[in-house]
Picture (cartoon, rainbow, N blue to C red):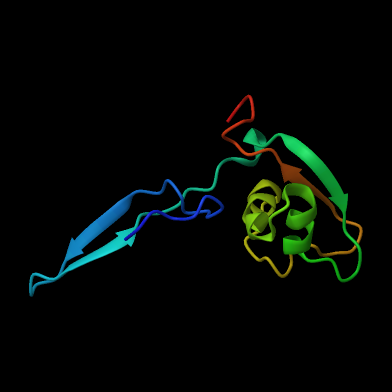
Length: 103
């Protein structure tokens, strides 16, 4: 397994190894624990409109649509398709925990 991209939600997650009865090793990523929502410090806020997508909001807030998972984590969403619903919902685009004062 190689290093994951900087914008991956799994960057920094420990790699694990399991060995089959035949002796074959399989490398996989360990569990990713989502931080408590109280730890997130807002960088930006976005009131959703009909048709908004969380990757588009991430592109506006961070300049990278692949960082959508930060918005989902901060707002308690595990379904990216429902993250912008209902229209009018206020979403927080958080500072990265690596730079937030309580991260």
